[in-house]
Length: 74
Image 1 (cartoon, rainbow, N blue to C red):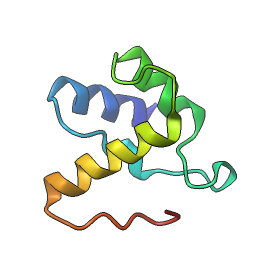
Image 2: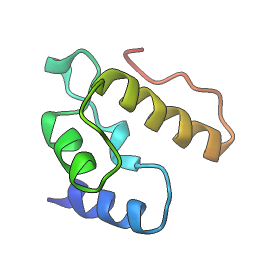
Image 3: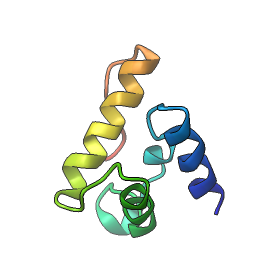
Image 4: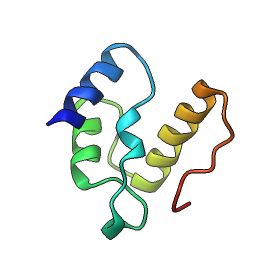
């Protein structure tokens, strides 16, 4: 629930989804299904390519922070 609230806040503020940093060991470096379900409910994800969407989220986070993308597991 906390991550969903964070996603609500980031989406409302038109900021990158910080919840994208929370990944599942069982999903090869992707967030759990709930991340994608919530992103779809927020109108941010169309359900077609979770890996690509997640990478775009990470890129947006790192670009906003001014850091080079080098997320763990990628």
